[in-house]
Length: 297
Ligand SMILES: [Mg+2]
Image (cartoon, rainbow, N blue to C red; front, side):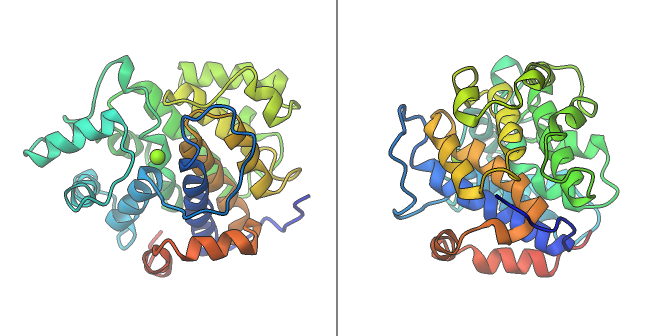
């Protein structure tokens, strides 16, 4: 049972978001797309994937300035791509990066159409919630770099507003998050899924998994990540990761997004020592410290 005080400093919240998200990504990545994940262990050599890498690349583009420039975010994505620092890229993101590499414009290279309704915008949008004066247009622009799709954007908005609600003390880890998000996002299939979850909120993660699993489709993964985040006052962080991994599907992304939201609310204190020890071996602690210590809201 988590009983933490919710008012934390913005830097601790950002640190919690980045680290709890990265751990979710690392533990989930091993089990991605495997079915019947019943025997879950976190004791293996972790690697992080695109969820964390593109979140950190976004941070690099925005941390030391109050202004967010999509072209700078695209430039950092391309830098990570050309330096072979991205693992497990989705097809829409890969398409955009290849076209950026040959000179494409950030606003035009993102994939369009129904197959662009992936998780790739939502999984990396979290850092924007730590900035003041963000408009929906800015959020859309940042999504557009890889996903020119309204479902992908709606999923990203859901993650953005969840984290913002955690930072602003509007959401305190209870069952109000999904109701709150339904009021904040446009009418899309992502929003429809949230509405379907309303009468099911008291179900356990394993029970909801019989109805909805995570997948590469943003409609499946973002609502499930928020459903899991609403359990953070009942179950501990590591247990929620385990339960999400057991469901199978896009386990790294759903665990990462859940971790980003829960970490934004409670900071790093939700992370048990054994997971923090494993995290420190990932060699992203210096980059995260640089980002957090120099963060401009
Ligand atoms: Mg991934």
